Length: 75
Image 1 (cartoon, rainbow, N blue to C red):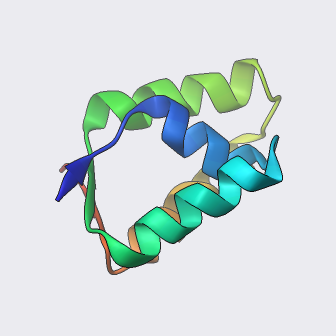
Image 2 (image 1 turned 180 degrees about the vertical axis):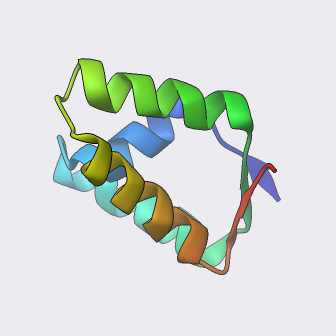
């Protein structure tokens, strides 16, 4: 199991660079990953402040993560 950082989640959420997003998606597809509370909080802040995501968009992204069988979110 890999523990991921905020940058990885931001790449997946924002699709800034398609190749990066695709690489992250492939990683998640074949490796179990763990996301800490701190990483979730940092990702939420970055998505709202830098990428101007609404609360609904952030929630939708987190729901997507939570629905992936290979992703473990810290309680």
